[in-house]
Amino acid sequence: MVILGIDPGVATTGYGVIKFSESGESCIFVYGIISSSARERFSKRLLKIYQELKKIIKKYKPDLLAIENIYFAKNAKTAINVGKAIGVILLLGEEKKIPFLELTPLQVKQSLTGFGRADKAQVQNMVKRLLGLSKIPKPDDAADALAMALTAHQYNKTYEKNKACSS
Image (cartoon, rainbow, N blue to C red; front, side, top):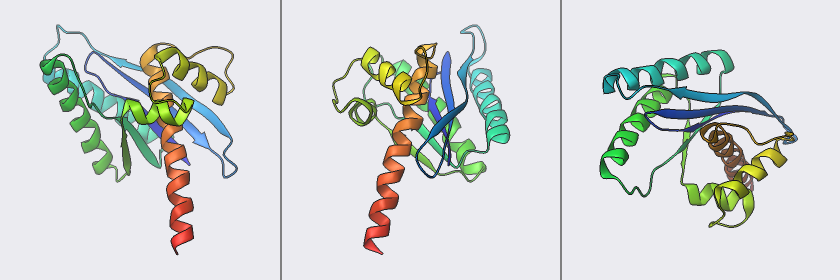
C-alpha cells in the first residue's frame, strides 16, 4: 500500500509518500514541501498545490491520501485559507479516485506516541524511529506529512482487521 500524507497549508504544504509492505515494513519514496509566496495571487497559490500534488500522485500512485484536518486555529483568516487548500486537495483526490482519511493532530499524536498531548519533537522522533531514519526529516511540514501517512497506515490496518472480523 502506498500512502501520500499531506500537511496542508497555503504558504507551505508538506507531503510524504510511504510504501508499506504486507508485513508492515515501510520505505519512503519521497518527502518535501510545496511552497508559494504571499506575493502571488491566492488562486495561483492553490493552483500550484493542485499541480504539484497531481505530479506526485501520477508518479507514486498512492492508494490512500492522509490529510491533516484543522480543528482549531488562532487566526480565522488562516483557518479559512487552509480550509481552501484542503478543499483543493480533496478535489484532486476525488478526481483521481483516491480514498482519503482526514486526521486531527490529536489522532496523529495518539497513534504515534501513545499520548495525545505529545509535542512536535516527540512526534518527529517517532517518525524518525518508525521509518528507520538517521535524522528527523526536515522541514517540519514534511515530517508532519510523513506522520500523517504513518498514522493513516495504522488506522487502515485496524479498519481492515475489524472488517475481516465482522465478515
